[in-house]
Length: 508
Image 1 (cartoon, rainbow, N blue to C red):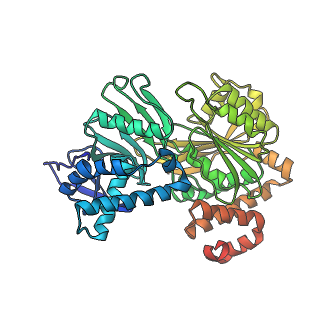
Image 2: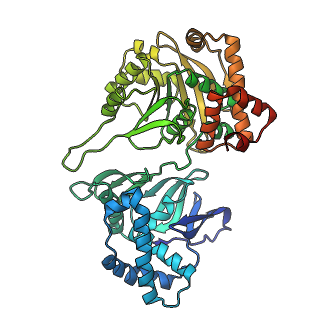
Image 3: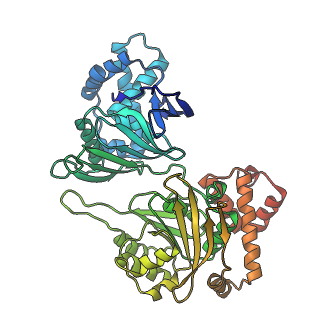
């Protein structure tokens, strides 16, 4: 087991911030987050109630060794979602027999705790496993052995934990175990590794001496509870009015580019916009790492790139998937991130041929977004930008962790942009800086809507968004169903909104 770093400072009291429970393979764990006077960042500690240190020692030194000899499990079976439950049941059965040999009078509830612990350290990722089960975390980082593991908490930002891996071999063993599950290798000849866990979490690992302080592991967690439009409005990241404008654009098959810096929430916002798609259309998503999650009833085909094998073969690039997606009769195309010229050319060609596209790009504002698109390495002609309708810029304050929609800009027929909304940091509001013109012209051209009708539609959708927030509708499935009701039975939905009908009476 890893060392536990929990020494209290001498120059003041510990200030508790939050305590909550985790369940890891059925074993309850307690997370405590606090501010300590001897640390400059929050302290994140994990405790396993009911597991004494002496018992833990026996489990690690004796019982785990016996299990290795008695339990024969193929890694492919663990990765197969259909066989995973069967494998776990078999493991618990064998574990119970071994535990009873060592602890004949062990009560059933304690048997469950010990079995879960052995599952965590035999089939799971040991000391890293509890962090993987905490949905409040975005990142898990091992900088080297001997230093505490760091985590990025959605609420508290970077936190130092009470878990330290004992030596560099332990770090390398974890990295190698992750790699074996997906056919990747990490060793002295291949000291860098990118891999993905079966849960969608993205893993990067490096070995000494490439990382001069020691071996590292960085895990970017896949969001199990994806962001939705109501979440963004509820958190004041964007206003209901602006989200309603984006909804109107998506309904009418406009193409949108979501830009922003690293960690600004581009992909989360992309996911939120995707839940506004009509239910009668086919959606293709293309990502390096699977992060998009849409309502289950949508006709959605998620595609992911693939890294080459150790021999350098079998790679599937984003460009390959993008070209292939155009042969799949998509109504909507979602692209995780545009980085290269050829990808951008295919993407804008898809827009020009009538496909509705939503994609992300690294840029800090609308000006930089246009500049990045029209200069190397993307370097597409300004004239191609006319296929793009809107640019949405996401912003993150690295000091405070605050995330906001920074700008919304429209793009005209000459590829020029105009900012419509911009976030004001003084009052923490997104203000209208100009009226829509190019977007209004396109909506009028393809739908016949007047400016007055556009304003009324935005107000109507704002009401629906605020209704969902009032009803506590933030889950991607529930939001998707309300949106589907809007498309299929709008008058009935608006009547329910006016009367304040409980959400459960509408969508079950």
